[in-house]
Length: 113
Length: 113
Image 1 (cartoon, helix red, strand yellow):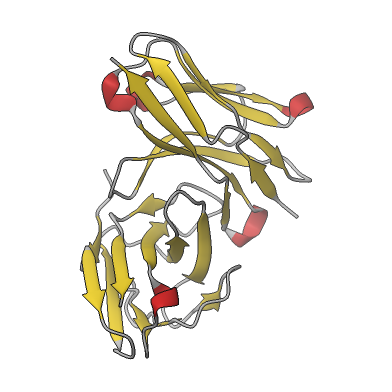
Image 2 (cartoon, rainbow over the protein chains, first blue to last red):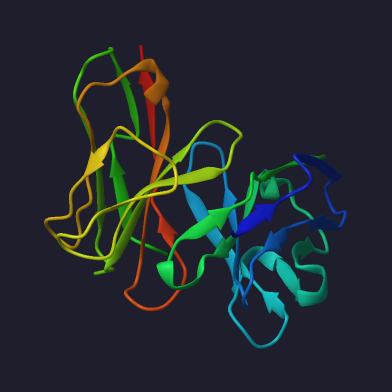
């Protein structure tokens, strides 16, 4: 069965510092992978997605993620965090032809001034 | 930016009341989804639809029901609300092709007293 693990429940970084949020997935075939961001009281906004091709994908707001098949990982990165990046981040894997997404439990990002 | 709307945004209601959470999208997407999200937790799929007159139960058992009479509208109904139904409900939609991005509404926060 498909699953997604986000091992970090909370991460705190200083504004201007670099960021990496971890995501590991379990899926038998080539996965479709997504990162979403959720601000308090809001729905989810897509940051970026990987379907195929270049394993380094660029997203909105300066985020990028790298798909590593050997490690079953799809970590999200940003070189310099802004205070407005404080939010909950969810990694998700597409469950094949059923069109469903399996979400991780999320990582809450806190940004220190 | 996706055009998907949910009403109400917040709802406080007493036990035993019937409620309907509205979800509408103006993008002509075939597929629509309802997720339940408890605070600080992952999203769980409770219902989805592949198109008009198509509804399926998701991975998390729910006492709610849905209908899909029109492409743009996917309401969720609870016949008799209970405190255990207190949660956030997120609606999403995606185009009618293979696995791709789901676009989310802002969510409805439900509190059942």
